[in-house]
Image 1 (tube, rainbow, N blue to C red):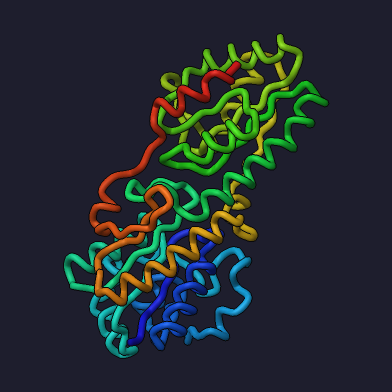
Image 2 (image 1 turned 90 degrees about the vertical axis):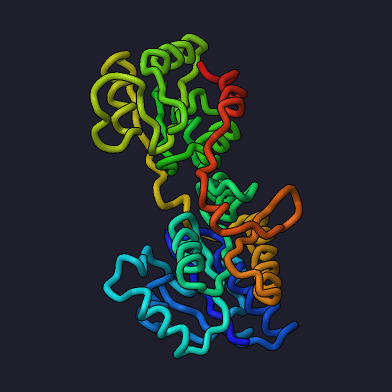
Length: 329
């Protein structure tokens, strides 16, 4: 059997661990051959490939990013994209495909399987942890660890200068990184896209922290928005810091963590999870369980239909957000 492997969407710590596990198990236990498609679905559409064998994946476990490269190419948006994709899979004698990605990459995989019978198995990755069919996605733990360390370091600067510090983290549609990193880092305010915030209440929390003799840290997801008022112009962290300074007179600065949350070596948990996902993806291919995605439920790796995995965005539960509210202000 010859199996294709691709990584699509944003880069993410742990992608290489999946590639390594897929190839090692497929070669050692089943004597399969592997073709890597470069830059996600672009590589399949354009026939851009490389051979994946045990030597090729040696030493990549601790490396961030992906040795196969990544892109956000959508075959359905490319002229003759699906036809070219099918021709290249046939040309490279690809019996099945392992697609590693988030909502975009796996949404394409689900559509290709449903409409064109593509023999594909999905592996969920996203630092946002927003896929509803799995308890955790790899990359999330690393991103939270990076954000938490940044918050820890910023506490000393905030206190030294009696300055409000706003930390903007990734999370356009969900606030999982903001919630976990904010709680772990001892933030005084956490703002997420799922809960529109009251700017007056945020200002009251800021004032309360100064009355308690230390300067506040605010963690805000990039997709968080106020309940009322004019539109947010530019990054929400910069907007929020400007509003705080304008309305309270307190000096405020913003740190936008941005893509640093995606980079670097994966955490131990993400290496463990990504490796297990890769091993179970090979088993799904062996069993002909096409159109499924591997997922973590508790400590067990299970298979779920790709269509179900893409059906709903996993958002922050209001009850979880309410727990963090004990530490606001």
